[in-house]
Image (cartoon, rainbow, N blue to C red; front, side, top):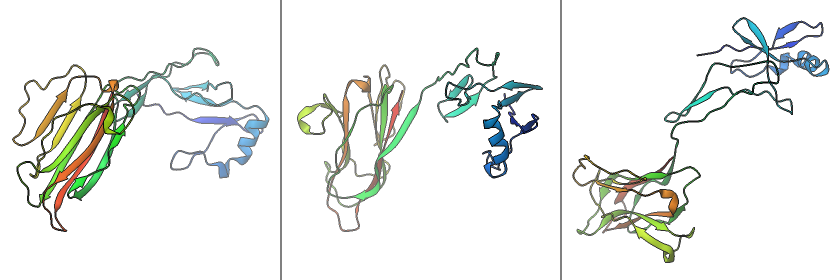
Length: 245
């Protein structure tokens, strides 16, 4: 339900007047210096219009408006939808705010670029608060060069018992084979209680599912590339990490 809310204040004669806003919905301070001064000096109150009734806007102990009411979050698109306002007499019946759904945060660990012989830096990540799992995708956009059967580009996913990037603290790693074929992406999903039942993995693609809570460990991610390359050859790829609550 969409609400049209107007904010008004008292002018010097005690009349209620609507405050002006610009095209972006921000208060037009340039035209309202007099009205704003009157609101402050005469202890004017802010009102919001709900239907045909003007209702006092609630404020906290510092005089700041309390604006949230029955908030519902669509986690997929992170859209906030304000429900119907349930407002009692001024200063009573606080408005409830509720956050629900599954949130996802994403970051590019290794930006898209052409990589040759060698290893990227090792990135250490500790699951953020509330994250139960993650999905990490090594996307292969293009490959040029000469490779043996054991060469190519490989995503490494390893756990750490402590928050340390050195190899000393490795607990286990996810088995992934190197690839030197365009489109042969490498994907690892870590989430408790899931299984790849019924999935048909496309030829050459690697999809690994680890059914444990990601929050148990810290995690290390890096890419290793091997092969024979000229100056303009290599593996064109990127790695994207998504944490899942």
